Length: 177
Image (cartoon, rainbow, N blue to C red):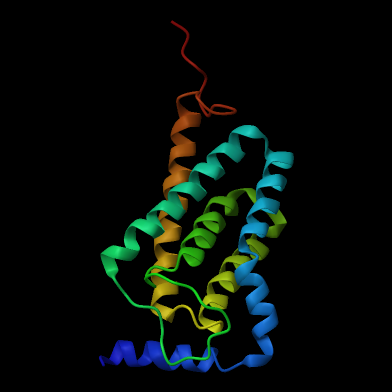
């Protein structure tokens, strides 16, 4: 076992040992989809159809990327831990972590006074996956990093759509020919 994998294992075992947090961490982890629906509804209500469609594209691409990368890394799920819930398939990257950090990165410029809440949500969702025994810390870290990249990518796409007058209020006036 390498030094990194030993550290990964010890952090997993430590966080997985807090059984009194099981109900909360299980709720956060397993109800993630419901949180996404609430965020989508709020985004649609407060920001409109175009930003909601862009956010949905972000979520679908983040989810697809997580699924595509798991067989590339082929990291097995943790074993010999106190499982609070079971899941199947490969472990790296954490899809929950990837998606939650993609949404936090994307929502950050729009979140106003709720910026801290958006990041706290992403961190809590990600850590919940370690607490309940289905991911190593490295899975969560890699998922968070890739998620931030996905979020920045979609912010860039939004900027380009606005620049060329294809989305919302254009940053530059449309050129009439």
